[in-house]
Image 1 (cartoon, helix red, strand yellow):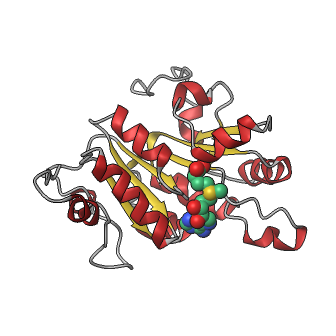
Image 2 (spheres, protein in one colour):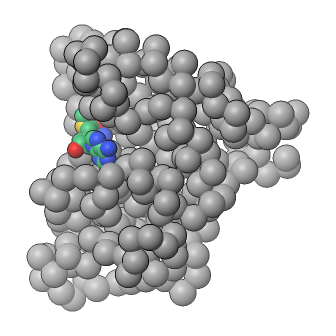
Length: 228
Ligand SMILES: C[S@@+](CC[C@H](N)C(=O)[O-])C[C@H]1O[C@@H](n2cnc3c(N)ncnc32)[C@H](O)[C@@H]1O
């Protein structure tokens, strides 16, 4: 992956903000990460906020590549600055709407893990239509996942969680990964999560895998499904 540690922080951060050549063609992972080969393990964090989670995860897993997708420009910049401050070469921040990214930009069957952590809950009933997670969104994520990939979702909002489970139940591509534990899949916590835990709120977690993976008899929780 590109190593531009000689540059000043602002320039390094700028280099970590990915601007695709085209917004209507799928990403090319080698171009995203400026690498000669497609990274062997790719994770995507949708609605990454200030990037505390994705940057910490990238720090712990330098051999993996991480794409942080966030629609707010200021937050996208913060993600890139955080990563640049730590001299991480394996993070890119992409400013785009998450469902568009999942549907149109992520190459099919190329992503190992997708996280959607504390998506905006839009608690008022008349605002539920703005919620990100619905079956079409989940299926778009499913098409981006490798056969061994997984999707991890957390929310503190019980009513949204009910809606997420219903959306997942309606998916023809994904099935709940009942045995998966959040602290095993991704022990890193987000800024929002730490605030919620301090306030004593419950955190709801759902992991999903492709139906074809859940059909594999050799699948065990936490293990790559290499034998499937
Ligand atoms: C409640 S924050 C959670 C941030 C982060 N995941 C965390 O847990 O710390 C939700 C984030 O998702 C972003 N967001 C909301 N809807 C989005 C969408 N449709 N596409 C991309 N980002 C979105 C918001 O701008 C915000 O930064």
